[in-house]
Length: 485
Image (tube, rainbow, N blue to C red):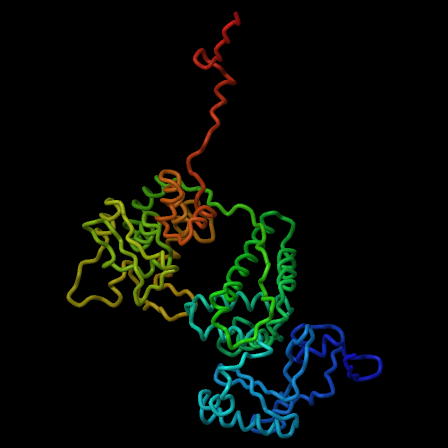
């Protein structure tokens, strides 16, 4: 039987707790007492510098691994060192705590003076050939980021979704006065570090499923609120599980991953129909836009034209350039630029535009000057410079979009994303008149199932046609069957 350490005779440490690190126990907010094994040393005082050996004594530990279905502990001591936004484990090749603390201090001192590359070469020469044990959430995210298979903005979105699931699943809470949205004074970093210290193996499919149930249970009994909660849960799961795709897992040979990954077998919630239901009278809206926006707010009018008639997304409208428009062939060639990162590869396309719409855009094109104004190459005017390197979406023309939002809402479009509602409307029109394949092609979806799920609601109403028999006329009266001979 596994040895059990006691603080006093009445409060033993359990076997489960003995497998957890002190930081993970604090994160789980357990209510029962937690006592550390005898092998652990007292936590170092915050006043100690990292060049002091006592600082490192409290950070020594023995790594565990699984063998024959049981958790086993290696003999040698390890330390985990974080510096410059990177974190690595180091084997200290000794069971003596004094000697291990001295070596940990020496590694850190060398690291500060020489950087990571030299430190790993000297103290972990065989790191590339060994699978990393005891992988944490932070270790996994760092490894996925380093293989660079995901765009920076996409990876940041997926990482935020995974951290949200982990934080809620393990009950990680911020200290008083901290905020996970505090990017300036360290609140967000503190929140992220607490999440990243949790071992990946603890995020099991059962834990994720329990998180799903708890998340949905928070919603009240209103069907709309429950459906909204389920859609939110599905969004988080879709994004987070993308970090564990087979294509990424194949690249992570330096990590010893759990046999059961977090989202294995986790199914999405049934969230009901997400099909777009048109509430727009397009003909009336177009007439009013031309009359009201065309003269009073030409920038909002241009955004309206690109959203409804061309089906562009907000980011695409924000960074579309005049050179993309061919007024001879009535084509807009949408492609990635140094300012515009398209959503998918299929987003790049030659989009046909009605001649009348092209005429409207041409009339709104500014006269070319010998010395062009800054950012005059963009269709929408703005004094703000684009920020293509931003991890979060940034729009040069946010003021223009807000102006258009206000106008659309005054016309009865109440959705959270009124500009995107224009794109949905044109998708519904094309699906009705030309079929779902044509709508998918025009909207530049990677998969036609996306079109079927969101945009294929028919605007044309289908009637059974049998109501005429309720008030029959001579033409609709059923004929009397001929008498049998």
